[in-house]
Length: 201
View 1 (cartoon, rainbow, N blue to C red):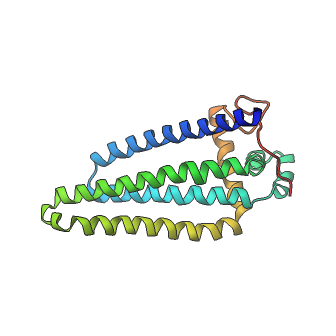
View 2: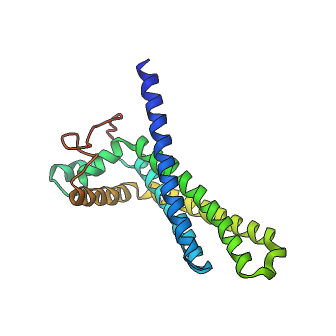
View 3: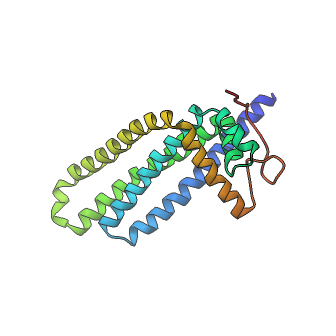
């Protein structure tokens, strides 16, 4: 019964987080696209695709990284080392957030942006309306192929450089925690409750 309650709470949390991120990101990109030209819209689309690929790399690196190389740094209080150990210990949660939540949300947004860009192209160049289906097909295919290719290349990189990548993410988290005073990586401080199984390799 306790497991079921925890499972439903996790599902509800993932739903609410995904919904919130999707609303914020979709609204933001929609507002930006309405105020930019086609070229800047394409640049924004590329940024969304890059975020998708980048978080996929982080999720894979978290599952491939090991704690051992970072323990000595954490003992010596090297900035970011404690956060890195936390990320590796909670690799399943990190991967779920990076690969599933951020990955799926940015994937959906890039698809919607592609459709909006096609409509803007047709509006700007009415003579291309007869070719709308081809323009739409080619742009969506290009977005899909760039995303898939980027993730494929990123997977190899993430596995080979897992400890270095997750170490950089840990350092970034340390800077954010120092600036905001809020943390999820230290159970002794606000927002620092530990969850999940420890991975010691």
